[in-house]
Image: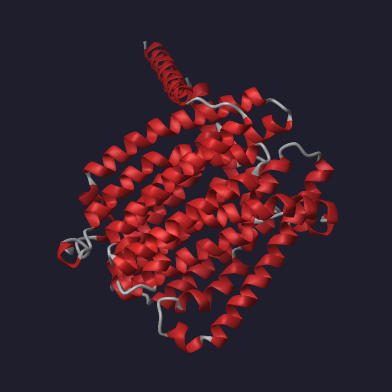
Length: 458
């Protein structure tokens, strides 16, 4: 039995899930502590700082992330070093450009920015961008190499240290928002130093970057970058548009709470996607279309059933979720048009749609169709932005913003299935049948472990 348990713990999906689970649980707990510690105006600044930072991360690392994972899976040792070097070089250059543009923008529009919820973001993110560059590069390289144990260590260190400070802050320090940013910078310095010391960030290979490997990553990345940015905007465009609307900063703080539910939904989604993409890419590079289809069905089916279960729980216990995350201060605002419990329930339904949408995108990228996936995401983003603008400027309703989320995700599923079906025929029935087989296999393995455990006791 010990061998079976050890095998499960070392399995890619388990380690990937554990890494994302660590960062999400600590992130949720930290989010809850911050929501309770600060007033809505200060908390809104923190939310914009983090969500804006996430968008920039996608821009910086989206250029090379999926491209490196795809091409490294079938590369020789020599080619791998060149690809990793190109990844470091490109991410460094993009960080310099982005930081420069943000600093210039902050200088020119300082009066406007300093009196808005964007002050924290424009002031401190350019510094954070350089500090967290090494460990973010390490995550990309380690994902491409399927070294999920090391990824778990990096994420655990970074999230764990910051969460520890947040707990101490709640009961002892009572730090200001600016002081918490300093803490965040310090934690990221320590994490980056670890990855540099271990050589996981690939910095030593930067001299091996050449024109060929640079172009290999950039040609793929020009599409995957838009896809990743668009995907991030699909989650954060709501907050950006609400922040410039008549609804005010309180609406930003309030809407960020049901959005936190989507981060929880992303835990298994990111975990399974991180293992599915390299496997599907490798099968595609080998010309094994049958294996690509099999992986698509298996992951899509397993995730869909899992998300139905998760969404049912969050729908039923929506009010308890709000209380867990932010306390009672955002409840009872129905008279203002901000019914946070209803928003959480809408995002619960949204969770059921996520797996098929994500897997069609992964399928397109894995068969080297990032341009088609980019088109899919573009139409999703366009639908979302139009829906958000109508919702906040015409109806002034957060409820309508949440409903637009369901609409653009449905658009994504339709387009993704249409484009993927042009490459290989897919069957919606087979998705659910593969999901059944997946959980049946797990059930049989659990029964086997149980029998061996009872046998060893006897």
